[in-house]
Image (cartoon, rainbow, N blue to C red; front, top):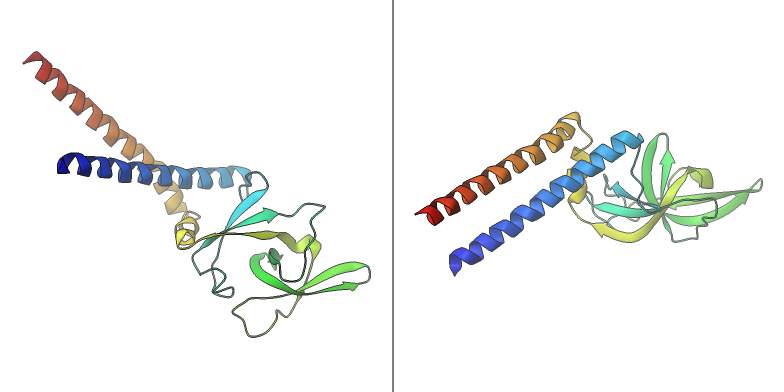
Length: 181
């Protein structure tokens, strides 16, 4: 009974690991093919690389954002992801102003003592935080951006498939030997 339970647990853990590696491989390949971040049904996953928004989300987390469209509007208190000098930043809107007919947003990280030194226009906004976050997964996703990880994420699933196929062949051979005996 214990052996059967251990076999089931081992199989489950192995399956979860394979699914996780395959999802990471999909993210890496799709982002490289698309030349940017993959978008699924208008949502993107972003990695949190600093502690400026703690405790809302932790460094190393992943967050989901709803990608901005032409009809998107934002209010004071919304958490947005925006581009500033080719860098992505996720902070909270603390003030909204209109200057020369253009809407500008003043932002601040929840953990920061002072507001950001800049104002963000609607065109700079990538999307709005949806409230979904998963801690620590971001470290793995950030690693996937390296060349080594890209190669690893292609090689590891192949090796796992070979191991699985070998185990199946050995198991089938043992069953055949038992039936012949």
